[in-house]
Amino acid sequence: MRRLLFSIKEAFRALSRSGLAGWLAIMAMASVAAFGMVFIGVHQSLDIARQGILERFELEAFVYPGRESKLSEIEDWARKREGVIEVKTVDKDKAAERFSKQYGGELFDLLSENPLPASVIITYDPEKLNLQWITTEADNIKSHKDIEDIYYEGELLSQVEQMSGKIGLVLIIIASVVAVIAIFLTFQSVRVAAKSSKDWARAVRLVGGTETQVRQPFVLTGVLIGSIGGIFGALIIYLAQYLLAGNSLVIKPEWLAIIAMVVITVLTGSFGALAAVPKNSSGKLSS
Image (cartoon, rainbow, N blue to C red; front, side, top):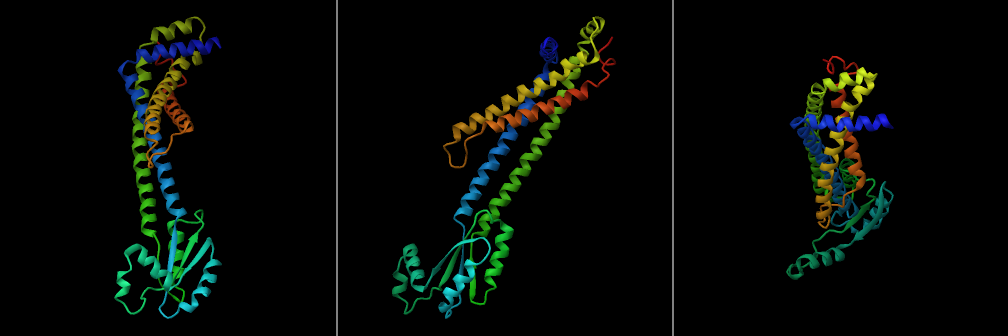
């Protein structure tokens, strides 16, 4: 325990000796955590939006004119399809009622007969739905001999999935670039601290200190950089999410995301520190 406390104390001293390089490394780690939190938040928000679309997703299949008598057969056929949880029929009279509610019934006063087609409305299990699956399903429905045309919100589902993929890719690329910068800055800050600690390292060796005891404070410096930067960056985004959580597009943040981001930044800082101080550090930390 004493040795650990000694190493932590010396790690703080090494961090202070790293100067501007240390602060820049902490800021870079904060950026990594912030981008990670944003990625998680955006991904969750898009998942919620997608789930909302899927829960009210319907496919409407319109029957050829003159084949309205086949409506019950089409309904039975649709119910047996994979992923279908509900099928509703809309005859010509119901179609006219729907049209009148949406657009007014004045148009029908000018017509001698109802031109609207009968249809079946199919609701699917949200767990089954994705763009590729529903596209294949729509093609199969349309190939039925009594179905003239179909309508479903495939374009909207496609836009949500494309947006999710593009935003996620952009955030991952930015976070990866920032992570590389953070590793480099951590490497530089630990190397600056190591170069300014040659007298300290010599003293530790003179009193019987091992190579591990010499290296440990500098590795812990990277851990400190990752911890401080990760907590700072993640908390900023957490507070921003918390304040904006009343907005339907922003969900409430989770503490688990902060923990994940801090773990990532600690590992990133440790990697940079280990690269700066190899196992045999006598060449770097000696006179």
